[in-house]
Length: 105
Image: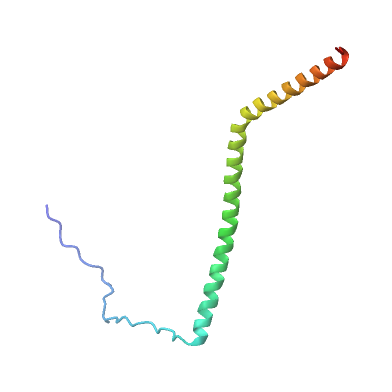
């Protein structure tokens, strides 16, 4: 089963010219162009640094807050023990002082 050869459409565009690529003119490195390029570069650097500063500040704040919370949570048991010891010692001393003043020997 062979199919008959397909006929191209009646109006097929064809390439009739050879297109040569040409180099785009390069801006000459005049002092004015150099200054403009440096000013643009400085503006871009300034904007990027502002964005980095904002992002870095926010991320550092979050990281420090997380670390402080973790450290605080790990300190709670030790703080509770220390507070309990200090309160017991203070109550014991106060009771001993009170008993000493009530029962003079």
